[in-house]
Amino acid sequence: MTHRPYVMWPHPVLRTLAAPVDAVTDDIRAIWDEMIIAMDTMPGVGLAAPQLGIGLALAVVDASEARGQAVRMANPVVLHASAMLRDHEEGSPNLAGVWARVSRPRAVTVRFLNAGGVTEERDFVGLWATSVQHQIDHLAGRMFFDRLGRVKRDMLIKKARKLHR
Image (cartoon, rainbow, N blue to C red; front, top):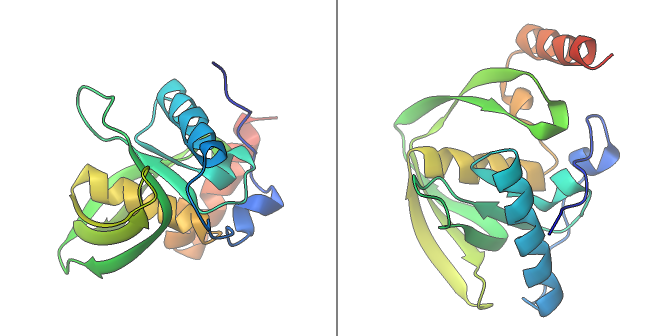
C-alpha cells in the first residue's frame, strides 16, 4: 500500500486547526493505516493527518525500537506535562532536509480516542512524549520551528527553501 504525498510548507492545511473526529469508523482506521505507512516510509516516529493534507485531528506515534507498536490517536490533548524538559532534534517531511533542537516536556499524559473508539489516557515519556507533542502541534496548525526564536526559525526556513530549489 502507498500513501498520499506529504504536503509541503507553506501549504495552508499545515496552519489550520484540524477538525475533531466524532467517531472512529472504518474510514478513520484506513487513514491511520495510511499514516503509519507514511510514517514508516520517512522513517519517522510520528505523523499527523494534516501532514498528508487531511484536516482531521488524527495522529500516529511509534517510537519503539522494533516498530509495529504504533499508537493511533484521534483528538489527542495533553492533560499534564512534566516540568522537566527534554531536548531533541526535530524535523518534518513537510519542510524536508532541515532539523532543529527543540525543548519539550520529558513526559506527558494525553487523552485521546483510541483505535477502538474508546477514550483513553496514557502517559508518554522520552521520545514517545516528544513525538506526541510534535503531532499535537501539527493538529493545532503549528510546526516544530514555531518553537524556535525568530532568527533561528527564519534561517531554518531559508535553508529549507534553498535545498529544494
